Image (cartoon, rainbow, N blue to C red; front, side, top):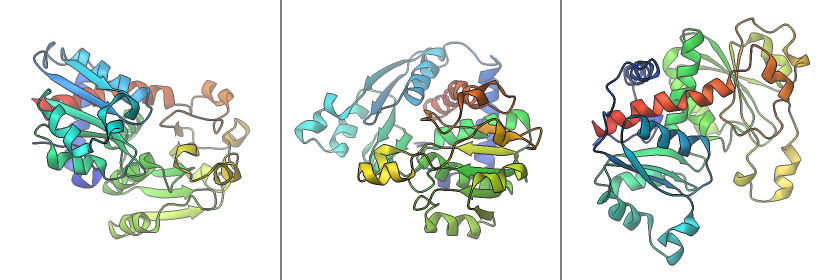
Length: 298
């Protein structure tokens, strides 16, 4: 079976293949009803709007159907059922499972018990491979990914989107610029892994120091749900904000990306600038997830 669990499982050729397939779906170069006899389960044990709905949309556009669980409270997990047993049962109903779970490593665990492909839609502070693919796809629409300068701003400790994207970018000779509030820096083991992969990682104390060097600025919110208490969250929640004034003198081709939702870290006035690409990025979730669903169920 072809599971989509972690960006670590992919070579660059795999990523490029999936991005090429996504472009075919994006341009309408596919046969309608490709998955008309298939059914996917969307198991989301954390809140989600874009990821869950784009997977459902992608499945519908391919002619397939989806069933869903939208919270732990709506499942037998509240009765004490293990994730392993849930996956064993749901595997007997469907042709693939898309799983979001608050525990890091949950998708890998699920793949050990599933009898159908598992797609990781986010596992705690771990990985979010489908988000990374749509991030790469959005960048590739405007510029070659090879050798560019990318800044990661925000919660780099708990941010699974940042972890996955950094690992993927290490396959493209990218220079990575990290900017994080105190205590939310990129985990040391991931930073070490990136450097062992040959990636240049440059740490910056603030976004002002880095932004004029960048081709892509990837902004993430401070994730309240990852913090052990409210005091820890509020200490860093307002430590950065992208405004139009900050964009003076940046590269003409700068792209500002954000996995969304945002919580004040990007001024809405930035939406009207040519640098804002995060809504286009969200739209790209559909063709990318069409490519993933087709790949695991074809």
